[in-house]
Image: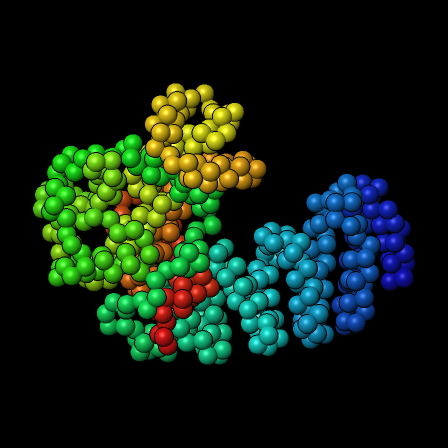
Length: 478
């Protein structure tokens, strides 16, 4: 072992000069040491050998064979963690070693046996006690993002929340397990015991902070902010008189006090989501859309309106109508309105480019978009109030500095996911939300039904969802 150690010191005296082809040969000395110590069951010696080998490794980014050395380092920290965990029973040291391995290899790509390091860390955090509960949850969520149907993680989360007396979170996970048809009798009983019999009304409305917990990670916030600053100008450009939609303004429903179930629910959802209330018209015709935007204007006043066909909503439960209403009303938020109004990503991109050019005239516009931007720009400009122009200038400056891509398809799918989340929060029923999402048409190139359901399932057990329920007074204990 002494000679093997000297050989390693010699090989790795200057790792930057060690040819990559020579590394496997150099490592044979370490493998020999590892074998001897394993045979002798000398775990303290093995721990020292791993630590010595880690010290011989070059600093990250310092050597030519950087990727090879990174793989070796990850393997060494994983190995050291396993020595502490299963041989020396030093769980805190094991945790530290595996944490370093995860920092070096966050996607778990370099783990030799292919198992998920997050699983080991989650177990270690539970052994470490209540102070490490949050870290255990984080590891299970990491595993579920990679493998959404890893049922053991749902069950582990349920146990963690139950042990911590966090009953609303426990109920939410039991709800998800019941939806996935994986709840055991105790989980099913807990879910059924606290399951509301009808639509639960929120005690509080959504604040900007609450809306922030509904945001999908793929939503480009700069693009949303640009739309939020320029929506009115574009909406006014694209507006038509009421008669063009086959409606008369005097026929709009007076939602407060309207006895219809739909009107009551729609009014309630608009208040809870804290969005501008559109005008609502009930129409009996043969068009297939149940709730449809009518971007109306009267004497230069924008009148965003929804045309509702009540016969298409017949037979739907309160929760289903609440989901549909929340899904549509999400798009009454200024940053999302144009997603509902403009039918194509090309047109949305033209709006973004026109808004940028309005405040940064030298911004390079793709050649195939120049003509469209030139058509939009003057029309948007004459409808843009000075204070909004100032707000737009600040947003665009930050957008250009961040240099993100203008990917409207990705942004649009993320916004759809936000509307699904809003519908789910308001209706409070994962099965209803999943059924309503499944009934929506699938866009070519967009997420498939199973992807949308997967998104909802992961959201249903997320800290963001739990926070939204608490802030809105929707928890089972609330």
